[in-house]
Length: 504
Ligand code: ATP
Ligand code: MG
Image (cartoon, rainbow, N blue to C red; front, side, top):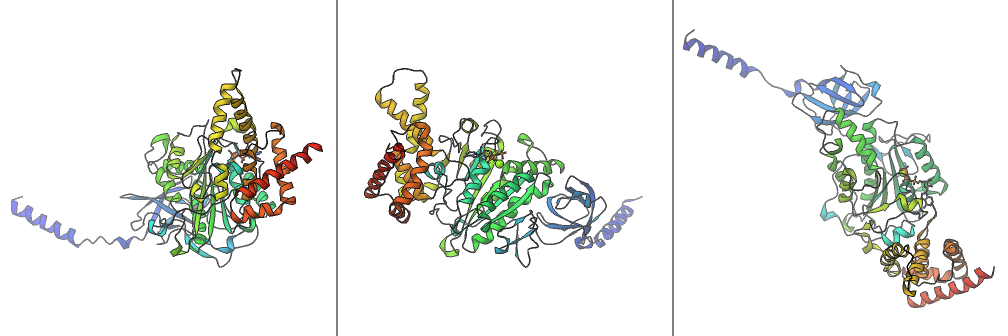
């Protein structure tokens, strides 16, 4: 073959190639090549986009989670046995949406927004995409309104503002869920809509939370988004985003919302399971590289909106479970760095009967104190310092050395303050009662009450002052402050009550 012939052949081949058109729309559908544990790998689907909703054989929906040269990876939002290899997959051009709006209030729904409480279908609700960009900086305003949890230790030392993200972190069985549930219960009559998102929890746990919320009349303003441990990893994975979309609808219509994600450790585990099945490269603790983005894009959506766009807010209380108190593990540190502070609950304290088991030293709220009411700021100003001094001194006092009078009185004060901060589960205090309790403790008016009696004394005193001096309570409530005159009135009331209490 001479050179000319070769050139001719080459020319013919080139011509042929030019006539081949690569029309991507020729193949609008692909086929499931692999299916297992809620993930699928699809061949031939050329026009899918990241995050897009796919239709799998007309029986299930899936979300695109990976785009490769010859393959699309997706997670299935249905029972897995519905999907099998060979099924036809079509891109829908939509992304996952959930029903949102007032019709959901009082309902328990699954992560796709379908009711699972047996109270009938949710008809005609508006829908919203589960993934959405967070509000811009220009649309946000400063956190300036308190979100009262009704828990004295929290509202006094780690105050939460509307629009803040505060992490609740601690080992197993340290009262994390109870704290969040109590915060929801305390929103009664405060015009705050609450959303509790259960991620990978035992169904019986969720049922008992629903029961508690009903019991306290909290389902009148609460929505539960529930994914249980039985649900597939993809359903657990989208649950918090669905809850967030439901919250956003209220926030953008000017309402205040409180959302609890219980818990993001299980969320991370569900995402890791999916990622490993999709053969994504594992990183630290076998989590995929984008684990930070998983939670940052969720928590960034909590916001306090500026007045220009309605002034609504979304306060987020994500929960994270630690192992043996290790808050420096991968997922906890990530989430600590995303949130505006954390409430650290400690097993040791919990087991020693200090409940709620808040570790004061390791708990912070970076923005909430600017939202505290004046009276609370006044009475709680020295609280942290007093408690940390007490802790230091009590270690020292264990050596049994002779202690001077001042040290002894610091110790006695610390013991009584610690008792004052103890609070039973589901027993929340309105802010005016919190101020009274702390005022009494910080003025050291409990000196003559034996330490073991403090809790009972406080509870009965609150009842007494509310009944006998409703005007004092009303003044504190209405002004949000405790001035000298009111303070003296509270002191008189304590003295009066002590006389009655000890004569009984
Ligand atoms: P898990 O790790 O299992 O999710 P958790 O950290 O969410 O546990 P909870 O379920 O809230 O913990 O609480 C564990 C137990 O402690 C419950 O029985 C609850 O009633 C009790 N408890 C929680 N807080 C208090 C409290 N302040 N006073 C008394 N008991 C409490
Ligand atoms: Mg829990």
